Amino acid sequence: MRLLLPILFGLVLPCMSGELTFETKLEEVEVPLDGRRVTADFKFENKSDKEVAIAKYDATCSCMTVQVKGGKLSYAPGESGVIRGVFDMGNFSGTVDKSVQIWLDGDPEASPSVTLTARIHIPVLVEVEPKTLRWDVGGEMNSQTVTVLMKHDEPIDVTSVSCANPNFKVELKVVEKGKKYELEVTPSDNQTQSIGLISIETDCAIKKHAIQRAYAIVRMPTPSGQ
Image (tube, rainbow, N blue to C red; front, side, top):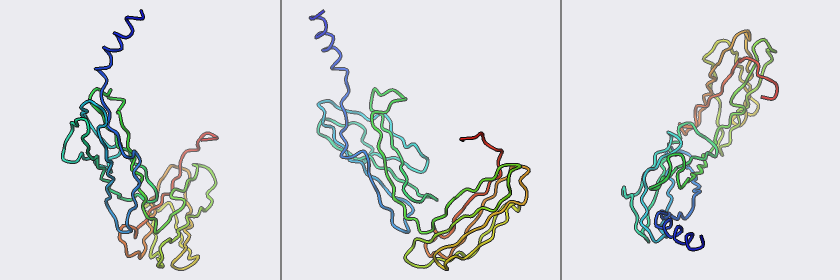
């Protein structure tokens, strides 16, 4: 048995794949005020003594695309490369984590060798809280409040508010002009389920921040604790 183990171990070693060593697996990116797309570059090197091949790469969200610099997928010992994630911000705001997964040759489909994270810091010029108001079917029809807080150096005014569903009445209140507003939202009927999209229009000069959204929902009661 003592002689057999070294022999078996020697047979296993040649089957082990090399690895790619990344400078960092967490890349933090600051987005400019008017930014719509940002990139996160992950630099790596093959520090093993074997050639390493990238079999597949993918992002876990449709808002991000993944590229390998030069389209190169095989790396000899000592060679380096770059994985680039391109993030389309859409309506995201605040701090958002997006992942990129890398499969090397021999990786099982469910177990990529490498997971990279792009931490995107997106400016919040118009903060809406909460973004979703909820009432239970058959419950109290009390008014609830959405607070709109301007976090820009310059004043931003709410110019109009509307709800696509007439079941929800929305009243705008000015707390501090250019700085803070409140929306008082009240359902007129809570006997059936319904949902309303509340549109908050502002005079923010940066277009992507100018229109904000909140939601009003009448839903079936959920079990206690959920």
